[in-house]
Length: 150
Image (spheres, rainbow, N blue to C red):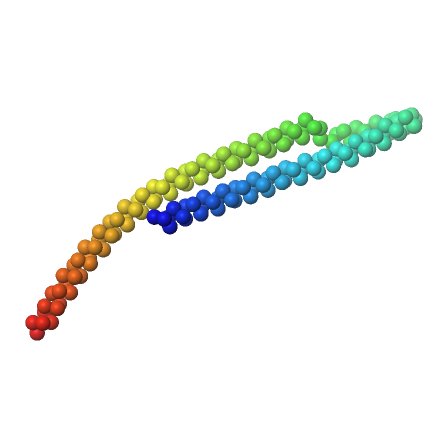
């Protein structure tokens, strides 16, 4: 019974460890994505500063600068859009972890049932083994009696 509990505990530890690693990987990916987008925002802010100075220096190029600005705006992700995407990703990940937790709970229940059934079968086998041993002892005694009778 102790070995079974150890195996279940080891399985639980291994599964929890795997979930922890996956959660860390997911957090790392989210953080990396946030850093990458922050760098892009910083890059675009610097470009906008440069564009502002061009507006002040070259009024005759307004048309070209406006079209370039519109292209940049079309390709940019707003802070709100980014936060919405991150929140959506977190929500999806939490949903998946909840499903995994439910599956683990179901596995634990099923494993408990298997242990109970196994315990009952072991007890039945032990009774059969004891009966067989008794029969062997009786047979051995009969064989000795028959050998002595020869």
